[in-house]
Structure formats: structure tokens, C-alpha cells
Amino acid sequence: MRTTAYLLESLVAEGVGHAFLVPGGLVDPFLPDLAATPGMTPIVAAHESGAAYMADGYARASGRFGVALAIGGPGVTNMVTAAASARADASPVLFVTGQVPTDWEGRGGFQDSSPASLNDVELLSSVTALSLSVENPHLAHHHLRACLTRMLAGPKAPVHMSLPLDVQRAEVASPWEPLDASIYRPRFVDGSAVERLWRVLVPDGGGEAPTRVAILAGAGVEKSGATDCLIAFAEQFEIPVATTLRAKGVFPEDHRLSLGIFGYAGHRYAIETFLSGRVEVLIVLGSGLSQRDTLFWDRKMLPTRALVHVDVDPTTIGRTFHTHVPIVGDCRAALSLMMEGGSARVMHLRAGNQARAAWLASIRAAGPREYDPDHAASDAVPLHPARVAAELRRALPREAAVAVDSGAHRAFFAHYFKSYGPRTYYTASNLGPMGWAIPAAVGIKAALGQTPVACVTGDGCMLMHGMEVATAARYGLPIPFVVVNNNALGNVWLRAIQEGPGPGALAELPGHDFAAFGRAMGARGLTVTQPEELAPAFAEALSGEGPCVVDVRCDRRFTTPVTPYSEAKKEWVDDD
Image (tube, rainbow, N blue to C red):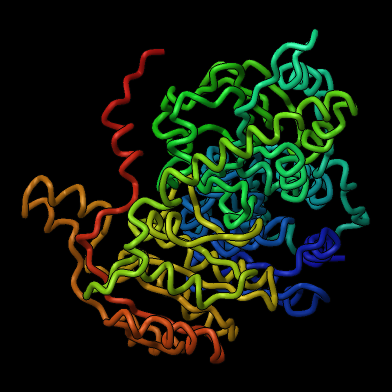
């Protein structure tokens, strides 16, 4: 079997049904096999970065991994930012790139970027967990297994394989054996560490058990499929739960124990609770406790008794704050074991349920979940982005997924758009490349099939990756692309205008008719200028065939709901 066919059939065997690519001479041998491999659907993107972002979105939504295919040289350089974004968010993506034949290397061949020239392998090594060149067909099996194992074993990460043309055309004899799930989905946890947690929750000798216990859930909960376990654990002991922005939706935001988001664009319930100085035990599940997830490393969030941190990656535990109970392990396995503390301990901890419920009731009684909740009903013209978020939430079914881009609109949607389940809210939260959500939504839709998928983006993002609307149109994907069009690079403008009109002008954008752009790309296009037009526009965008660009004219002057984060930034001092 030819190497290209072998690779594609191996990917199908691993549960991957789509490959995202931009064709080119250095991957020509893949094209016949892409068209003929059962179970593999190729999606041709407008740009290599778009293909890579699509693969990233597919990986996040499918729970498996994504595949992006491109030529070496310019194809690889076009994918570097996407690879870095996937690495920052621990998204498993396999980048496969074509290379000149091995006997051309270093001889001045067209688009030679082999190890003897520009060296694609080295170029991607800094933004992937593993970057290999398959210099011999006998290595195809070995290198593919090495890449997939490293990509899927926690912490997950993107990987890269470079295949010279002569290797692509060569025959591979070794049959592919799918990876055992225990390799990439290990259910391990340090049992002795969980025992230490129980001694904190139920002290030895009958000491007073903590009443005010809270959970901060991160992306590790989603990656381990631990939502049901988290809900069961929280409900058993009446423990309130906040999530990071990256994990939005892993705990339903309309659940009675939900505090919403803590951190950047977070909710009042979560922020005031964690910064109150009253939390006794804080259990962190699968979060790296980054700058944005901790309100600029705000020490006021630290509990009075014990910080407990669960993560598959031991290097993230203790890197931000001293951890009293470090637990290395899978979040699902940890939560399962945490519910098996023994009947006496469980009953002792449940004895505090009434007090915890009263504590949560006092949090809710102090005010609304959101800051400035009236903004979601604003009748302002140009429109308020909070109103856009609220109207889109009403238009979408509960199980729908939304991909949200980088910019001021991300803060508004984090705050005012509720998510009710894991893998329903997607954003590139750590590196934050503009335009990510447009192609990512294509990959998410490919993975989710009939589940409705919407994209929320901005005018600056559309200028970067809006061409991928044409990809959605080409494949008839019914994605509403909601453009929060405020004639500015929103967050940048809000900062720059405080320095004067000159700096502010540098962050302004000329007006563009993105509805007309959408129609030019083969999609439908709608323009919204009045608040009462939002609901019918979203209904039309969701009901028609193929994608629809909804150009929503918004006011750039509305400040984003990130005041606690901004205040923490002003106060931050590096005292370590």
C-alpha cells in the first residue's frame, strides 16, 4: 500500500473522518487517496492557516484529533501561528506536510524546505510537541505511532510529520494497529493524594470540617469527559462551581450550583465569592491557573485552609500558587475516587450541605450573576454587543455550539452568553489569534454533524480569515457567521482612545459591508442595524441552506465586562 493511502486509512482507523488541506505540488500523491479512502472526507480550505484552524476546531469538538495537510515551505510557515495556538490550548492536531524528494535536499530545488534547507521540521518543533521527518518508508509506521502517542497522551499537544515526495509514493508493508485507548485516555489518579484531600474535607479526630468549599473547573474536565462526575460530586456535597473561560460550559451555567466564570470577563457570583477571603477549600480541576484564569494571579482568591489542584500535567501544579494538596491525575478518575471516601466520611461532609446551601443562597441574594445585566436588553443604536449575545442565545437551541473569536466581542459573549454543556463553547483562550473562530467553526461543524454551530467574530477578525466563509459555502455548511462590526479593533481601540484621538485612529477600521462580502463568497448575507432586527435575522440565518454572514453594526464605545480583571491588573505586583 502506498504511504499516502496507508496514512489516511490509519487515521480513519483512529476515528478521524475529516482532513483539512490546501493542495499543492508537494502533496499531490495524497489527492487520489483522499478522494478514494472510505470514511475520510477532505475539506479544502482557502489558506493553510485556515486548514490548521479547522483541524484545531475539529479536534476540540470531536474529542479525538484533527488533521491538517499542506505543502512544506510556504504551507508550513502559513500554519505556524495555528500550530502555536493549538499548543497553547493543548489541542491535539496532526500536521502532515509534503517535502521535496530526498535526493533533492539542499540542492536548490523549488520549495525545498527539507532539513538541508529551510528545515520545516525545526521550524515547527518549537510550536509542536514532536516534529519528525519520514526520510524512509520503513519509518512511516514508527513515526506515525510516535506522533499520535505523543499528541494524545496528556497533556495533549499538536505534532508534525514531514513526508518527502518519494516516501509518499513508496510502499508500506506494516499493517496499522489502532492505539489502545489506555495510551491516550488513561484513567489514573494518585490515590494517596485523594486520601489527603479527604483528610482536609473531613479532619481526623472529629475536627471541624470546612463549610465553604468551592470548585474551579478548567479545560481538563472537558478533556477527560468528567462533566457528569463533576455535577454528581458538586450535587452530593452542595459545592458551588465556577469555570475558567476555556472551560465555559463544562458545568451548566443555569445549574443551581453554578457561579459562572472566574477570571477574564467573569461573573459576579464567581469573582466576589473567590475574592471574598471566605472560601476555606478551593478545588482546582484541570486548570493551569494562567494570568486570565486567576485575575492576574490575584492572591485574594487563595483559600483560608487548603488549595487542592488536580491535573494530568504535574508541571502546572504549584507553578502559580503554593498547593497544599497536589493531585496528579485525570479529572474524571479523581472525581470518581473523591466520591468514594467511605460512608462515614461522606455523611460527615454531607452534614455541612445545609450550611453550604445557605452560603450559596447568600451569594445569589447579594445581586445578579452578571455585572450590568441590563446591557443584555439594551436598545442602543448602534447595537450593544451584550444585546447581540443575549439574542443569539435565545435563537440557538440548548445543545448548539458556538465558536467565539478574539476581540472585545469575546468578553461580551463570555459574560452574557450562557453555555449548558461541555464542547458547546469554543475559543482560542491562551494565544488568542484573531480570526481563529471562522475556520474553527468549519472544523467544529464537520465534527458535530447535525448539531447547530454558530461563529461569533469581529470585523478585524474577518479581515484576517474571512475568506474561509467561502469554504463553508463550498461544502454547504449551515453556519451563521455573526460579525460584531464596530469599525475598530475593539479592545485595542478602547485602550488607545484613552491616549488621544491619534492613537485611537490607529485602531479604527474602515466600514465594510460584510453581508455583501458573504454573498460574494457564496453565502447568504444579512445586515442588522436595529435591536429588533436581531431575532428575525438569527432565525433566518439558522433556517436557510448553507452559511449566512450576519453583519451586526455595533458601537465600539461600550466597555467590555472585564472591570475586575482590569482592576487586578493595575494592582498586580510580582512579589515572588
